[in-house]
Image (cartoon, rainbow, N blue to C red):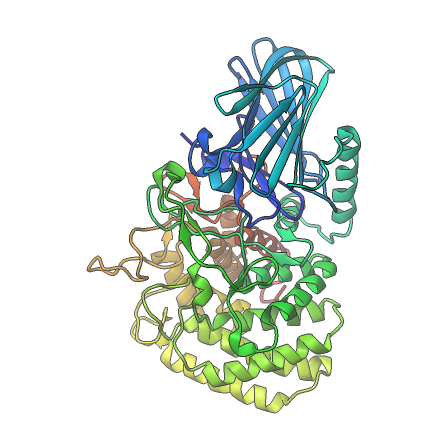
Length: 595
């Protein structure tokens, strides 16, 4: 049975990432980049779909894990009856081929260990051709080659390679796995101690740039490190998560591939970066955005691959049984073909905040934004699929209209506050037109709240952003009643659902079967809304409760199952860590102010 989602930790090199469970197994790794086929896919199947385990042979009495101070270097300490061992896992920041380093260190006594390597390419489907040469194992399948070296002989057994060894106090046994294209010269086995030192230095140099203080600075820095790890450094793109198909409900079919760059997610991440001193990442993402959208704002997609490409066909992998039998396992994402009006506002907001934080305006980026504003002017009255990527038909979602207002508002402010070319009066008139319609059509007088979409009486967690984006003040009675209604009717023990997935008659609201857990980011939105209107004690208490759901190394998934007390959805989730960063900052500010 798969380890629980929260039993995993992340290692990565800002190009791809691996998940390591508490038992010392790497169960997910895509090479050479986030959206490449996995060579370890046991997370979505079993050990026959590929994993790499290093663990004591005997029973483990206790396990403790942590990241080395302000890095993404994972240290797992296991205590047995005969001694204690520490496994240090990391991926060096690289200019060359991707590398995984695992150093086994004796801490006390003597511990018998076993490394079991099961390489499977193409998401666990392809058994590679393997050649063992003493202390090096080389696996080849098609154009891919992986070499694993260690000082211990590895014996082949039923498509696995096993190394048995013993470590005593002070002894260090290094393992190195390196990927390269077949035909390229095999990389020389590196100096693992130098790689470790270089990786520590690289992460410390990055975190030294951060401008973080306050009572939750450790959690904020950990979240920013996680967000940096989800950045594809060659292009500046940010993936929503490094995994695919971890379920929003155990045994359900709401399983999606998040290894791509949603403009919305990346825009939120950009705002979290710029608020904490990371303008380099903001500039890189802006440049990626201009390349990805290319020559026509009318062709903007809501999601791209990490190089800015548009082709993301959604497929299912029938040979994988899914995480805890949650099928289908999907790669690609059909949401790329949806119309989601809100992304335009999110891009405008992120770019506006980046300029306010000191990012110099760019003529090409502003020309693109002006073209986007023209497109929104022609389409803001159209129905769309909305922020939650509904597959039940287009509607006039209130959040989408609010974000159209944001697009026009930030366009006007770009002209008036930053001296950029454009017609601020025209943009302001459009913003006023949208504002009036939303207040008229998106508000239900009988309920006394804003609603999910025009003509609906449903609530939606995205309405919590109305004060955050400046559409209405946090203490406006309509906003107060909406926030209170969401806190009362759209939560499970205080944790916020995105929306109710079923109507009272049992029919699906979003065109999908089944239910889902509470959405971590939405709970942070509730915290922000409460703090903005002055209910800071309530907001702070809820914030502490959400922090308590993070795992032992400070990571958050997409959703949290309150009744099961476990994480759900893809992991770790950029959205969730963005919410943590922003809410921590909000709780440290004066009521009513914006980050």
